[in-house]
Image (cartoon, rainbow, N blue to C red; front, side, top):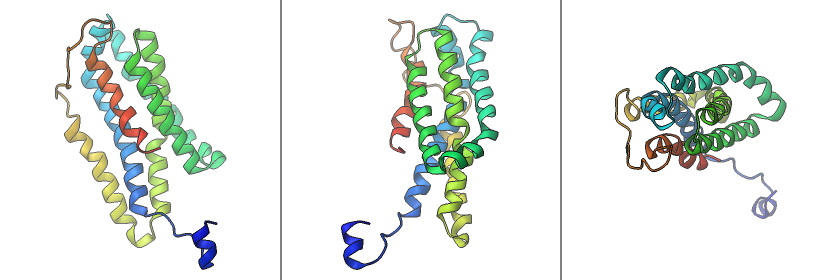
Length: 195
């Protein structure tokens, strides 16, 4: 109990559910965005890592396979470790692996980082929705889920197929260009605010 609640003899007030909604929506937005942004950046990733288009496609495949593998197991992890702890762990894993993807200098490194990122991101959507439903009373759940869906749909406006990435080909001095790095560093900055 806090000093304020012990003086008043009442329990501390629960956190604002809309702050929780924004936090889980932001994490899910970054996970969904990352799925699309890699597809847009694929030719640049292939060029940066001196890989063929077929080899670079594994960047998408490794993410999606890890994502699909962890998705059914996410409920077990949430029950075992708690929804909040598991969600925070997933956000942390996703953010760190996003940084590793941006810092990668070889195809093998980015494939490993993308697989870890997919594992971290695989549970974000279902855990975010369950936390959202748990946080709001039944009469406000429809509005909360609509706001959550709006955040996911906003991704389409941000990472529309064919939209050029910012800062493309500014730096060709290293084997990894700035465009590939920026494609993956965005979740690092955004998801850090969720943790």
